[in-house]
Image (cartoon, rainbow, N blue to C red; front, side):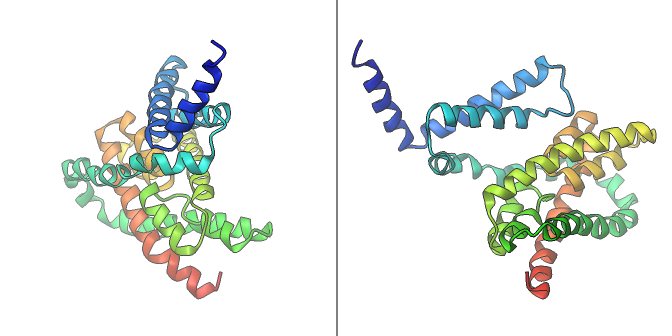
Length: 243
């Protein structure tokens, strides 16, 4: 019995050198977060991804695990972000007849909204004296993670800081779109879905699919177009402004 703590530490050290522990922690937190979300009657202000993130953070602290080790091990799961984003093309194809009918409003709305989503965060952070690294990390906060990671690395920002901004943005966008829709009695799934995807990336898109397939398709469209537009424009804007 006296050797039990030492053996546990030895086992933990062995697991920390492989991706097994990080993958188990991530998947366990994911399933637990979803279960707790349902038990709490699915509050909009507390999405399952936030619950999962808090669970992972707590376990990292309890296990005295370095974040760099966890991130390196969980990269095996990060590879799946790309295929998951591409898979959103399925509902897009299924709702293509709705999208064709609204291509003009989409064409005029997207550049303005996507630009504002990046600009206001950068302007506020710059006014508060943030460094260029912080500005580069906050600018792609409304873009889905696989694209935002590439943009952040290209701009010289911090991926960890960007992911934090991404989580906060998705939560607040989902909450406020729901509130505004209730205040103004907006029930059109196309409008709600596009707003959720454009402002709330993957979190908003997940919420949109809860509303219905049409909302999910338009959220996928908003998320995808925002990512493409931001990936093309943001590096050019940073280069021209000299940030």
